[in-house]
Amino acid sequence: MKVKLLNVLTVCVVLLAVLSPAFLVFSMVWGKHLELVKVQNSTCEVNNNMRADSFLVPQSGGVYSSQSQPSINLSKQNLQSHNLTVVEQYQLATIMQWFFLLTPICVGLGIIAYDRYLVYRNAVFQEQVEMLERLWQQSIEQ
Image (cartoon, rainbow, N blue to C red; front, side, top):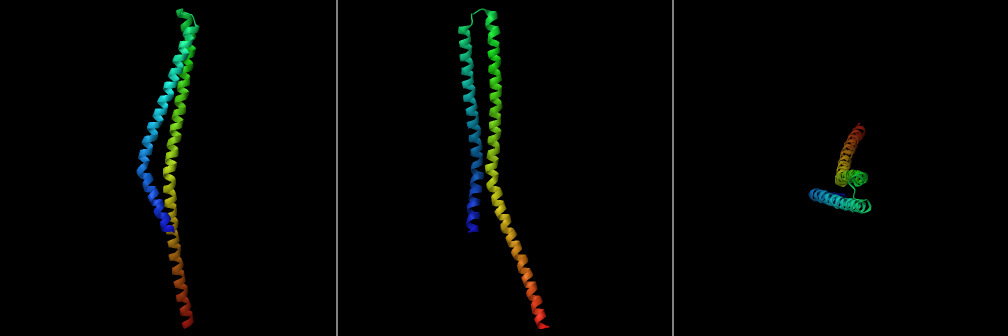
């Protein structure tokens, strides 16, 4: 039973090691795609807001420029905060990938180490039994 479990775990770890670069590349491309889509959406929102402001505000140069500056500053702040959340999402995705990669490896190494420990304990126990049998034989002979 343990050998089958160890074989299955080994196959899973090797498969994960082989596929992890593909997962990493796919997640990076997908993250960049999502970032691009969000930036495009926010750019459209900024453009729509600027068009709406231009229709509402009279076309005198001083009034338009003074009222459009706060909306431009707000849009820049929104983009910066949005970029921070994308970076945080990327970091979280990286942490999760390493977690999913290292967890099976650690479990497999733990099973192997525990199996080796059991073999070691069995060898020590056998040595103790043999020593006690020799002492018992010696005490019977005397």
